[in-house]
Image (cartoon, rainbow, N blue to C red; front, side):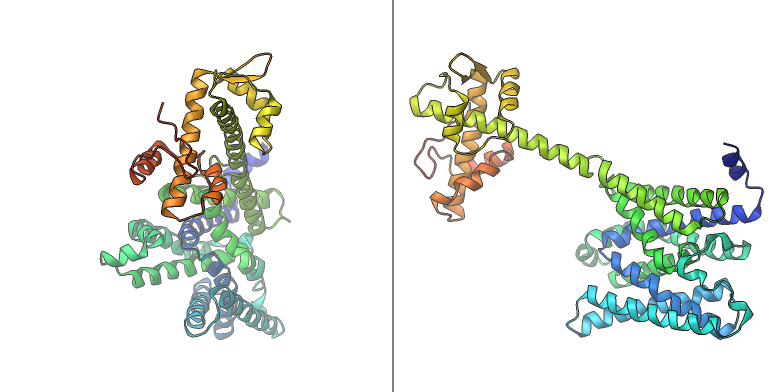
Amino acid sequence: MNTLWEFLSMSDANVRFVTIGSILLAASSAVVGCFTVLRKRALVGDAVAHAVLPGVCLAFLFTGEKNPLLLLLGSFVTGWLSLVLIDVIRANSRIKEDTAIGLVLSVFFGIGILFLTSIQHSGNENQSGLDKFLFGSAAALVGQDLITFGAVALLLLLSVLLLYKEFKLLSFDPAYARTIGLPVKGLELLLTTLTVLAVVVGIQSVGVVLMSAMLITPAAAARFWTDRLGVMVLLAAAMSSLCGAAGAFVSFTAPAMPTGPWIVMLLSLLAIFSFVLAPKKGILARYLLQRRIRRQMTRENILKTLFHLGEATGEYGHSYSKQQILERRQKPLLQMKNSLHTLRRKGLIKKSREGWALTEAGKKEAQRVVRLHRLWELYLTEYLHVASDHVHEDAETIEHVLTPELEKRLEELLHYPTADPHHTQIPQQP
């Protein structure tokens, strides 16, 4: 607790620089990263992150000093050049975009390592610390760095705020944006520029190796929590800022711990948490939904089988054993025992000495399922020209998800049929 209080007090100017810089860099990268993810250009961020290294080295070679503004300018130029080369290779050859990204990434990064090695053996005293751009060193941020990188980060956030609607339309429907007269190429150029800037300002904190994680991970994590872009952007910025501050705190409490890698690791943990536990889209939520659907399908299949047994004898209230149900079904029914008890609890079936029988409510529900099954079979044979002996399997799946609106539409298309392709009567709506 005392350590946390000391951190919040931040009497040390360097701690303030590191914390504020980490938050600004993390937030700005996350905001721009949302549009990069939505435009399916996540790998481009990784290519740019590795392509800025030769720019940093060239800026130092030309000036002989580590001026943050000049280093930023040099890295921006080579980052931009990498994107131009990716587009040129993709447009003028048979090489796909992912292959072009891999080529540009490896070539630029290799050149950067070559320049960096040459600088380290040049004997220039000012080169000390230049290798920090590989893995980042947020702890090395000073006042001048904070002003330079902070200004760029604020420029990124302001640009997204002013052009939010245009970027949103560009991310989801560029064809419509072009139709209504928006300068799509210009907007793509600007968004690409912002992506390069976001990468450039982040390399001081996490380095070229981990920068793509700062750009992509918060956006990917936030995407699991919402379907609204505005909320996604705010969530990504909040997650990234929190991890930026937490990374600075870890470095404060344990000076041997680097800030940048800790920011990325905390973001990764937050992303894993989102992937697993996010409502609706998380792995756990999807698993529970699939299990619920499977159980619902089993219950409906039991009702349908009891209806078929009653349909064959004309006695829908007759009781049948589990063995008779399985024989008529000719397919295994998962969790059958639990499903039978659930149906009984809902009042859809009843149990007697002879076995299980449909109640009046169960008969109506079974008629609904059978009706949807036979309507879909008829649709497949009449409109898709599928052989009548090949439609049963497809209908088995689709009958459980057809909505009342689709049922009504099917009836209209089929002109309110009374029999399926096998000349079996289609039950009318109860």
